[in-house]
Amino acid sequence: MSWLAKFIYFKLLGWQITGNTNFSKDTIKKVVIIALPHTSWHDFYIGLLLRKITQLKTNFVGKKELFKWPFGYYFRAIGGSPLDRTPGQNKVTAIAQLFENTSEFRLTLAPEGTRKKVQDWKTGFYYIAKAANLPIIMFTLDFQNKKNHISQPFYPTDNMEADFKFMKSFFDGVVGKKPEYS
Image (cartoon, rainbow, N blue to C red; front, side, top):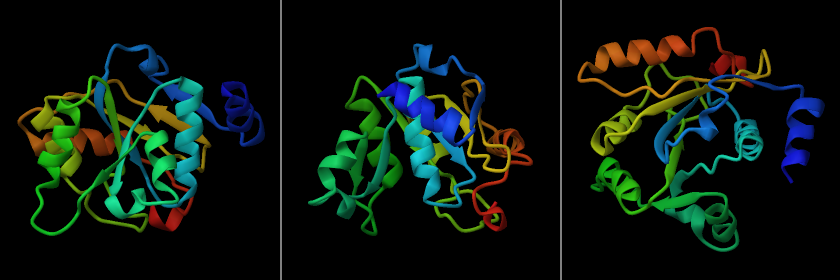
């Protein structure tokens, strides 16, 4: 089915992959992947196509209610893990546990936390990477240029302000499916 994904992604949609195109061949079995800008549901199928093309199994978390019948089986099959989002839960610790309990887990998140325009990113992905001692790989959802640009693995330092400045610079000029939310 990878040939079909390549046909849709490259030929029908006209997208390209640039940057760290060998990231799927890396030995990184555990990583936090951030994808931006997340402005539309279209981001989901672009991510699924990219995953199929690179042959890289990636994961995501979603509210536990999404994992009930009839969609639960599908979401688990494509790498989803349910997350209890009731108030009082330490979500960073819960997600860091997912990394400890598996030999391979590549968590993909949208730091905005929504498809709407935001001024600041949520910081959970950063604390998850720090807590689990993992690198962060950044990739763009650039609908204007039809491009997924992939970064080298980045290991967070103890300077959160500098780290966020570095990561945000990777996404400068990237326009999502809905430009007004980018």
